[in-house]
Amino acid sequence: MAPAKPEFQWTRRHLLGLEELSKDEIVHILDLAQGFKQISTRSIKKAPALRGKVVVLLFFEPSTRTSMSFSLAAQRLSADVLEFHSESSSIRKGETLVDTARNIEAMGVDIFILRHPATGAPQLLSRSVNASVVNAGDGEHEHPTQGLLDLYTMREAKGRIEGLKVAIVGDIAHSRVARSNLWALTKLGAEVTFVGPPTQLPAGLAECGAKLAWDLDAVLPEMDVVNLLRIQAERQGKNSFPTIREYSRLFGMNAERLARCKKDVLVMHPGPINRGVEITSEVADGPNSAILQQVANGVAIRMAVMYLVAGARGK
Ligand code: CP
Image 1 (cartoon, protein in one colour):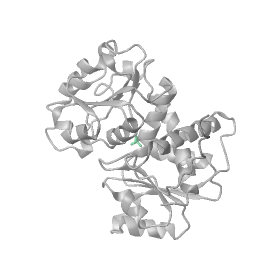
Image 2 (cartoon, protein in one colour):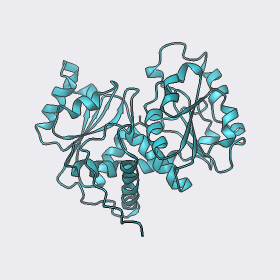
Image 3 (tube, protein in one colour):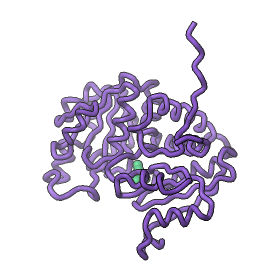
């Protein structure tokens, strides 16, 4: 008889990226989120798990999905939530990120949720405050809760992650979503193929366990999941590709391309989508699209993450 699996002990006070997480840690978050998802189906969508805790959303870049779902997730667990908007704050008077966070922490804070254009900003913050820090997207580095909600959505739809063939399509070079997906998917046994213009496919990613491809039509028929990325215009220099129309012709998902895929292919996109560029409305709003399920699952994933880091005693 196999020995009983010991109770999993979560020890991380911060969630900074998926690269440093083990397979067991990732699976633990997904399993916990499955339980939290039930709360969102109740008429009273509230649980007391974070009652008395204070969560601060520190966003230095625009966001709709991530900021609102962290806020909703924290409120569903009965935490108090403060929202900080950099453009209307004393950042405008020259205050640094660390000084800003330390001053807010002095009011009594348990968890900072940080989105920042600089790679490594969450790591810096985690070394500068006593509260937990959750990375809500740092530059081109990682967007760990997006990666987790993407895996959750794949597992929910396909019943497994191991063995899935996943294409991640588009502006890989500038995508923190692509990196977080890569770390988590490969740890759980999926096969990742990055597809995009050569100017947006860093060769180093092949050494991290991904296949690289330039011809979307050639790879589509064997894929279980196609995850389309937004062109990160705000992070690109000039001339990453000739024109939007050219990009859309070569890498956009449309009905014709969907017809080349497996019948049950899952089409995903982290949002915000640019209709007619990386995906047509027909596909985005069609039966293979999991885009709104991703958003719904994001709340459960963020409930699980905040619950775990708030209760951790470790590093
Ligand atoms: N997927 C995502 O991060 O969306 P927002 O930028 O709207 O948060």
